[in-house]
Length: 182
Image 1 (cartoon, rainbow, N blue to C red):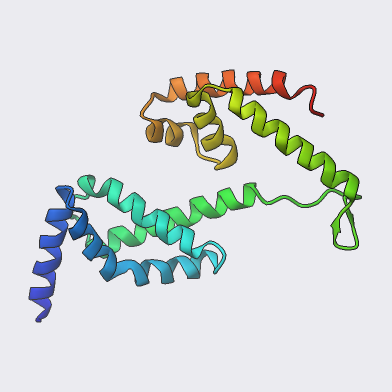
Image 2 (image 1 turned 90 degrees about the horizontal axis):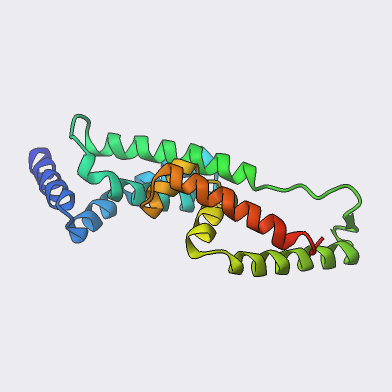
């Protein structure tokens, strides 16, 4: 195939994918998945690279109808991968916990602290089960995955204001439910 034929084939795949053809998008992913993974690996290292690559391709699928073609598809996908890498790296840093002084003995958690953490985890799981599904979804997206209010709202198909209200009510309810667990 000549370079022109390759480009025309890619443009055809893009047009089909933009119209919702998952198979065409799968073919595009096949062409670019190694490039996306390699870029992610260079940006965030081996621990997060696979997650970044997967999330970047998912974001590309969701955003494909808005792809205007002003840049090459590869360039557009490159930008999505970079943005995704920064977002996931920031989230990962937020969720990295250092053990508290005195919680560890000989490389492991002290038995008392391990028991306390297990009790807290069980209490939190029970408390989350008491929330409405909408409240639970917002809490998990915001507080576990570190999504912004606008990201959570968009994913759940609600307004940002609704997401904020659900989050506020859910946190207030969790506070009441968890008071006795400590």
